[in-house]
Image (cartoon, rainbow, N blue to C red; front, side, top):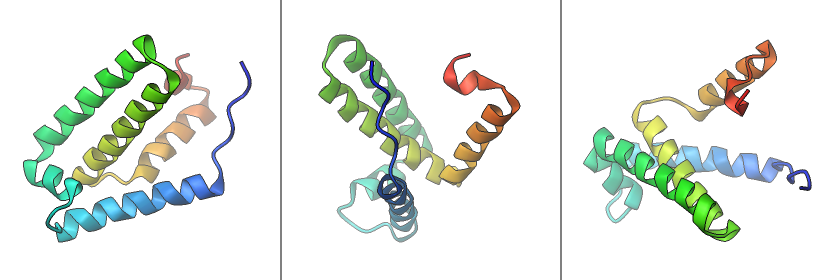
Length: 112
């Protein structure tokens, strides 16, 4: 297996912009937005959707191709970002926790 291509600066900027857009939609609640619809349904529905997308990601990884797994993982990441926003937990706090664990040698985040 070849090493994965690294995240680029452009990738990280996109995630930052996506998070900002999610917060903007949560605050302004524009009509016709899927994000608005999810926020209106509330935390329980968003959490349920995260669970559904997690299961779909697992199924795709076991039974389908790479393309489907990437699509489901994208859905999972997006809905996780919605959940974090609803809980007012910025993505950088999650990344900070991962970085702390890695620095301490507590590699639970990578399955050790």
